[in-house]
Length: 131
View 1: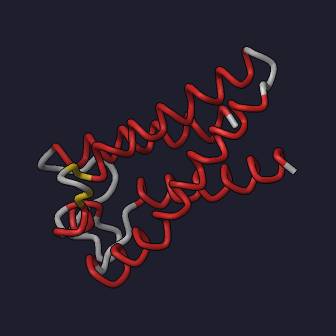
View 2 (view 1 turned 180 degrees about the vertical axis):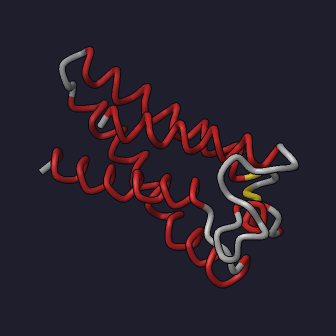
View 3 (view 1 turned 90 degrees about the vertical axis):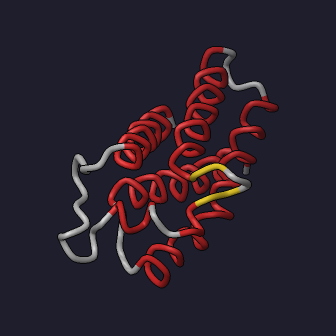
């Protein structure tokens, strides 16, 4: 679980860096369907006035912090539940975000895809832990 939170956080930070820079570290808009900038620039990339690339590092910091607290305090039931709820919230956004990439931006963002995978795997793992 720590690995998922850490990978998601790194991808979230890279997404933010790419959003703020003129040039991308990995994704390039001129390379066909893998253009993070194309995804970042659509009007739907904002939630309640905040760009998703700003929200992603915050979200994964919460995931990582909750996971570490869960480990340090030997899995108290409430931290496992909080972690599950955080992943569930993220899981609720994933289909919409994938739709925006594919249908609206007509591009795939590598960092976004990594975060989506982390959220899906985290939701599955935390659900299995609660059972």
